[in-house]
Length: 250
Image (tube, rainbow, N blue to C red; front, side, top):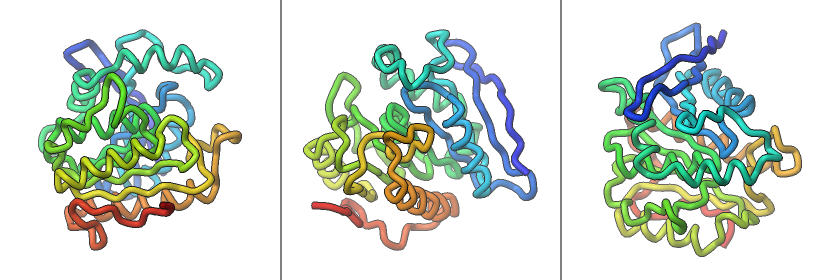
C-alpha cells in the first residue's frame, strides 16, 4: 500500500510544499527526489512518485514553483511555464533540494528530474556532494542557456544517467555531445542514452501526442536498475568513469 500526502518544509525563501509517496509494507530502499516538469507538481508528477514508491522507494516531489504562488499549470500553458522556469536559477534549485534532504540522508538519496526538473536534477548534482545518483529525463538548458552548468561538472560526485529523445528540438545533438564531453573530461561516471524516434517529454504518458512507449519503457527500466544499484551504495557494474555507455544512436 502506498501512502501519499503533502507536507511543508522551510527554505530560506519561505515554505515549500512537498508531495510524498511512501511504500507501506517494508522499510524504503532509499529516497528519490522527483523534480517536476515545467508545469509543476501536477497529477502526472504525483503519479510518477507513486510508481517509484511502488518500487520500494520513498519518493518526494518538492514544489519548485513555491516562490511564484503558482502551483500547477496546464500543458497548454507553455508560455507561462517558460516564464516561471526562467526565473528558477541555480541557487534556487540548490536551496530547494537541500531543504528536502534530511540530515545524513544524501548517501541514500537520488534525484530524478523531467524536462525543467531534468536540468534541476543535474544542477543539484553539481552542488550537493554525496548524493547517490542523478537521473535526467530530457533536461534542456544544461549545456546552453542562462542557467547552463557544464562549467560545474567537476563538482559532481554522484553517477549520472541521462535520457534524451533523438528528435527533441530543445536538446540538439551538439548539446548532448557537449554534456557528454564535459562529464567525460571531469571523470564523472555517467550513462547517456539517446532514443531514436522519441522527442521531448517522451516518457510523459499524460501527453499522448509526445509519449513514446518503447523509449519510455527502456528509460524506466534503466532508471530502476540505476536506482537499485546506486541506493545499495554499490558500484555500477557497467558504468565506466568518463565513458558513455549504451548510446542508442550515433
